[in-house]
Length: 241
Image 1 (cartoon, rainbow, N blue to C red):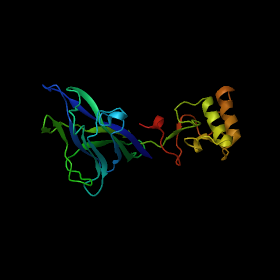
Image 2 (tube, rainbow, N blue to C red; image 1 turned 90 degrees about the vertical axis):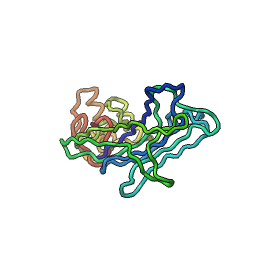
Image 3 (cartoon, one colour; image 1 turned 135 degrees about the vertical axis):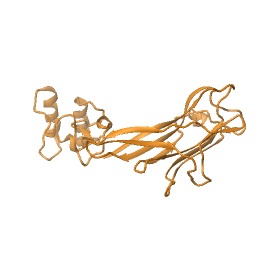
Image 4 (cartoon, one colour; image 1 turned 180 degrees about the vertical axis):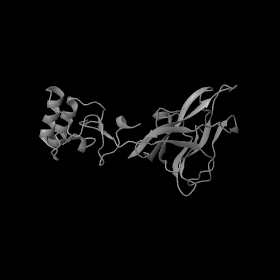
């Protein structure tokens, strides 16, 4: 199974005697050998264009993944404006990028810590990129921290009868299954988990079996309630660690 998550890159400004914060920056990140950075974006951050809720007024922005031996990761470079004085607040925190990570879960019952680090020198289409903050015409080397996540290996990856993958089993899941079977609605998050009665077929009988269990004291799902192991399904957040 695969663990995936979006993490925020946060710039914290402290002990700043001036009235303005950073006007630009470049960042360079890499993960553990078995942790893959699969995306980087400034959407929804302070680095986004002003029309999209950020602070950037034109300026420059380039975010990309990097590849190659010793060069795998992601970089982002940004200038908030070329023609106006635009800066982050003089103190506080701001999200400046969002990074998507992915890695395999460890073996069952094994706990592993995965790490993303700021590392200088990763190279995209341009020159190698270092971690630098621009403030009042000076390039400042920031104090960086790592992002760590502890993962516990599990083979339980999806909730039985949770068609809409909201972590709760209720009548909405029966409706979700009916919609998919007969009205062209969205597919269940894990089809195997919707096979309630264990007969190897996914059909209207599973809708009714699920409703009987929920409201009429009927038997529980054949594969067990809650998070169970469905090898052909992706890991659902509610079952992740």
